[in-house]
Length: 108
Image 1 (cartoon, rainbow, N blue to C red):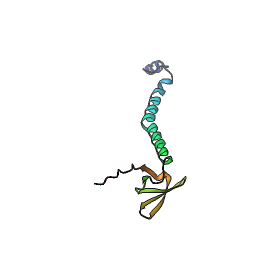
Image 2 (cartoon, one colour):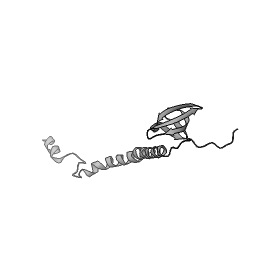
Image 3 (cartoon, helix red, strand yellow):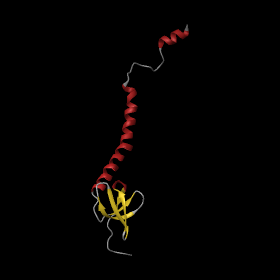
Image 4 (cartoon, rainbow, N blue to C red):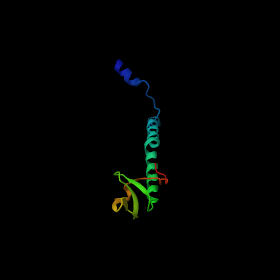
């Protein structure tokens, strides 16, 4: 008999509040992921795309594989690097990770 009364009363704390309250934590979680993970990654991709678009002959660069070289030739997809005198390699343009700043003429 007491079971029937308890069942009829319903569980405490349950209300007919609706489904929006359930979505608030999900929305907050998505917002956190967007600002901490998605947005910075999009910025890095945009910066890398700008770097690749601004490559010119004579630029000193570093590849993803760790090769340091000077650009001697460019196409849409391939970069020719001179890594030492008369030693040239072809690298996919997308593998260029860093453009080095030109050195000042001083040596120590």
